[in-house]
Length: 303
Image (cartoon, rainbow, N blue to C red; front, side, top):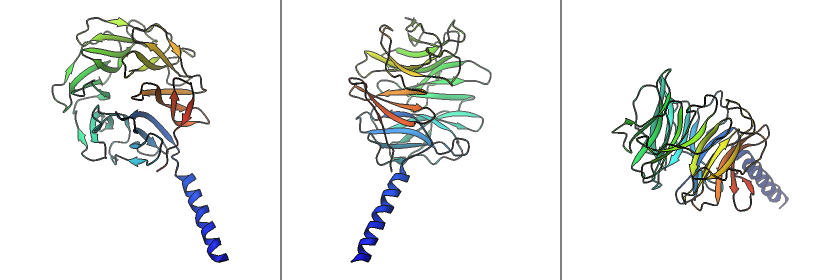
């Protein structure tokens, strides 16, 4: 009896230790939420100086972590985005002498390279209906421009690009495009909107520093973005917070004030929650922000 009790207690202790060890540690970022709100996708590398960055999925509560890509020839993969139908995931990967755009099925099968273009082809996102993909393309020593193609990677074409570096395009509805640019503002990046041919060109934010990664809400009435306006340096380092504003650029409001960097926010389909990555010396990982209460919860990623 004592022996059985000892074995049971030992097994329980080992299971508890295993459970504690299983939570992912390292660089975790660039999250997105599935269209039905039940799953997330993200990038992960235990040691960013040595390991290949792969794409993982998990339940929205962080359970059932699963590696989707095993793609060692592309050391860094970024920007995974669920398709509107939830069937596939779009991302870019550094390969050979540049970056190319890929899709993979949500279950990790059917890896498909969509672009074979010179330079760096990065930050792809789906159009609202999922029939097109809009992305950035950067030729060597060239400016960052906005391109678009159909969902199979054909009919690639350059859209209107104002003079400057034009980042993070989102085709939000119809022909409207949301993006970040340093247009006539060297050293400062603000958020703009236009039609794909350059008409109805409007600057939405007039803030110092870097204002990046705009994402429109499911109801199409709010835009979230991250900004270092309180520590305005042309750098990826420093303090970044999340901000919310109306789609016309009015009522800009800071919604996080954590130490370090709150980055790459994405909307939950219910429109009342955001998932984001938070980095500071003591906290690294994915977090969920409830807009109605301001509560922030860590998503503990456990296989």
